[in-house]
Structure formats: structure tokens, C-alpha cells
Length: 193
Image: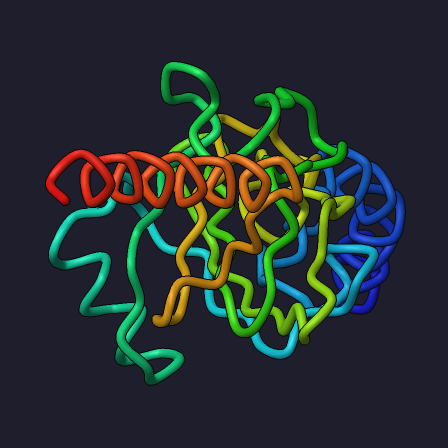
């Protein structure tokens, strides 16, 4: 009986390291994807996401924005629209710069869409406005290895009243138009007298 116990113990001791080698350890799962205030070089006030779906200004998207950030947001387009919407281009990498057509003041939200996910980021452009933001999609979509996915497009949502500051040339054009209307009105009065 002692010999049998010794033999079983000896076999178990010999096979134990072999069994440990036979079961490979699986790599740890990647960390969960969660948006962060630091996904942009200018820190966001708040962020929400990621969520599964697309950014296109749908009614449910606008309801979600109101639920997450309050306020009544207006959709102003996305970077993959014809002419890039309110942006000057559509970067398609994991990091890059989103540049606006005009400085954006007050409260606004940027939505980043990568893979089949999107995240929302709220900013305050103040009275001077923000003209561009450097971004990372790491808080929007990562693959199974924890690697950020390329940006599909970005969307801009403004908190009314309109938060886009007109370019100086727009003011000059309005002034020229008003001057023209005044000139035509003056001539009509002179001709009617």
C-alpha cells in the first residue's frame, strides 16, 4: 500500500509541470473602451460613450444629447458630408485635428464615430471661440487588442443660439448689402419727389 501511494505521488509530481505547460494561459482581456476628457488636447467638460451606432443627426441622437448634457442641441453636420460640413476636412486616422470652418463659441458637442461606435464630448468655446481640436479615438472604439480604430467622421452639435462666429468678410458683405439697400432707397425717394 505504501509503495502504491509513493508511486501515485511520484507520477503526480512528474506530470504536474507537464500539465501546467499543456494549458496555455490566455492573454488578459483589453481594457474596456471608455471616453475620457483627455481624448482631446483641449479637455472636454463632459463625455459620454461609447455607444453602438452612427452619428447623423437623427431624432434619437438629439434626444440622447439632451439626456446626457441638458440643453436643446442643434445638429450642424459632419465631417464626411459633401464639403466636410462645418469642418475643413475629414481626418481618417486614430489621432488628428478637427478644424472648424469658423470659430465655435459657447457650449458645443463633438461626436466622434469610429468602427461601429461613437462618443460625445462637450466643450465650452467661451466668447473667443475654438478653431480646432486634436483628438484621439481611443475612447470611442478599440479592437480586441485594445488598439484604437480610425475615425469615420465627426459631428458638430451647437447649443442655441447659434454659436458660430461669422468671419470678418461676412460682416463686410452684410455692410455692403445694407449700404446698397440704403443707396437704392435714397434714389427712389429722390425720383418720387
